[in-house]
Length: 143
Image (cartoon, rainbow, N blue to C red):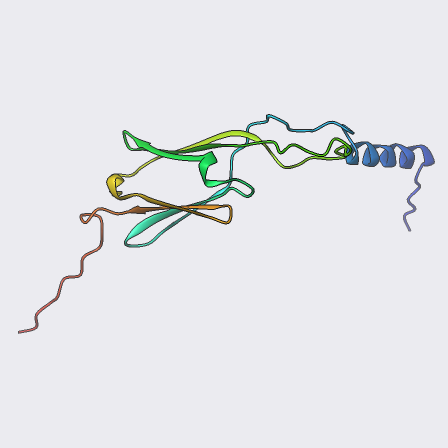
């Protein structure tokens, strides 16, 4: 039979670490001005490639999409909201600041036909494929 003995001093140290980690930085902001990188989902079908960026709390005017030399760049800034002076943050995990994500477009994408839609914090980019890149079906004649 094995016995486990816990030292009271060791348990106290672990609890101290838990509470210190939980309330680290009180009452300071932990990430004001910190650059962040929004998450993106990329899907593809025969007609297009689709990118969806997770940008909660941002407005359309704070997001920029550009294409230059086959480099697609999505950039913007999530600004700090002015808070009530009577409230102090205990913890702030919402990243703010500028971001920029760039992707090299494959030759199969028609860069002149890229479209963007922004709704409810989700930026969706549709990257249509060129006609050459789309699969073609060939009818076989049986004779």
